[in-house]
Amino acid sequence: APARRPWLMLSVLALVVLAPLISLAALRPPGEQAADPRTLAGVLAAADGSAPRAVRLAPGDYGPLRLGRAHAGWRLIGSEGVVVTGAPALRCDPGAVGITLDGLRLVGTGPGPALAVGPGAALILSGTRIDGAGDGIALDGRLVAASASVVVAGHGLVAGVGAEVDLEAVRIHAGGIAVAATHARLRWHGGAGEAGGMGLCLTAARSELRGLTIVAGAAALHLDGGEMALDEVALTGSVGLSGGRASVEGRGVVIRARGPFAWAGGQPPGAGAWTVLPPP
Image (tube, rainbow, N blue to C red; front, side, top):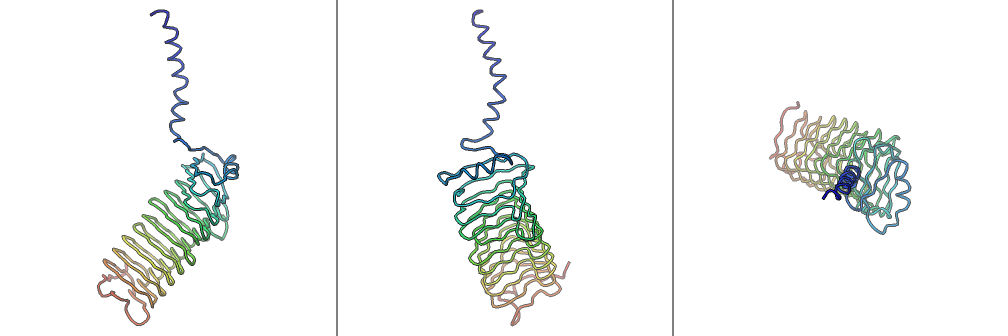
């Protein structure tokens, strides 16, 4: 037994030295790659589209970034201190589908969008903040934004023809319009929109709002054609609902405005079942 003690002591010493390294490795799931502002460009350039990849970013400024078909299925994981800046900070080209941004902050430095999602691209946001003096998000593809994501911008989200938007517990703060969509599909459940101008300006769009609060300086909701379903929605603005020619269904809708409706041809369908209160 005494002869074995030196080996035992060496084993214990080895564990003490290696334990921190083992712990750090255990924090990074299998298949996850680390990158910092110096190395991320090389990681992205080496992508060949053969397999999805998760990249954990060290604190720093990474912008601007551009993702394409070779990055389909990738996941960029941020943390406190990870910032992507540019005009736009991030651009997703056609074929950039199934990409996830987790815990990043995008900052637009120009009059254009902070985040540009092109046609044929699909992006998922989780716990991501977007700041921009111009548009927060310019969308021509598909966007899924999950809980804890925030947009602060001149205009929050501008969705073009054929765009698809799914927002879950997302907050949008805009100096102008919170959401503008033309011939697009919008689903927004939970969260809130605050706007200095219109809350939502939707043209020929198919939309579903549920459990949502909209506070606007102008009309809380403006519809020009299209279809809209409202469920447990609070609208506050100079006008609650404006527009016309749209198919509207509402349940549990509360409007606080000086003029609840500015609807072509009278009140919108089903408006008699909504609750209208004095402005705050």
